[in-house]
Length: 285
Image 1: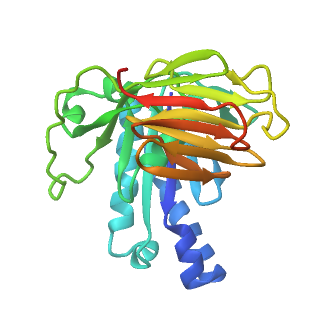
Image 2: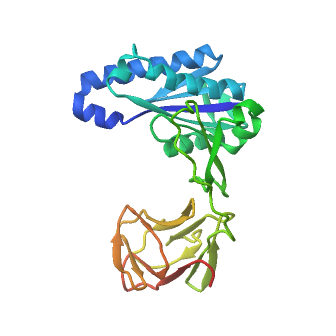
């Protein structure tokens, strides 16, 4: 099935600027419009989650056309939410999912959530599986964004945008030919790892199930992780005492419950500057 996440873009700002009463009314009317488009294309709305709608379709083409209809309805002059400057963004995945007790579960739900997070206002972002299942005439209205590693996914995959309104679409600059995928070499606690599209995550912490285990009181059980996002490598801190990063030739940083893009080469110290360092280097050694 196709799983569709449709999200009201900028709803937090709407609440801050217009107040709770006006914002809640506007978002609710917007979700009504989205649900109407799902019903018109024989989809099923499973729930509203805050300012988003989760729906499923048995037919991929219907799912994508419903997403386009959502944007068209929001753009209509008689759309009250549209008059408030409200926009939506949509993410669509395709594959196996579990339906149980009036809800939908599974990896495809997570993928759709990741895709809607990538989408900008007024965009429809689809997975490679959705693209492959579309008829040729609809594929002609699709453009490749890039091959990306989605959060929680085991490897990189193509991500596309469906151009529901092509007349004013931004001109696409052809992607340059790429050589070998970017890699990150990491060495610490007597172990060496290479983070790349087929192994996009590395865990650091005090627990023995970490990839790099550092047994020190200042280190949290699940202290941090390195994750590949697109062609970047993010250090994500989830600790109590934070993480220090010394990038060769570029200075030192400390993050706590935050993210930092790793560049060039340097050293990671978790919890304290007194622990064993973890060396990293982007690209081939």
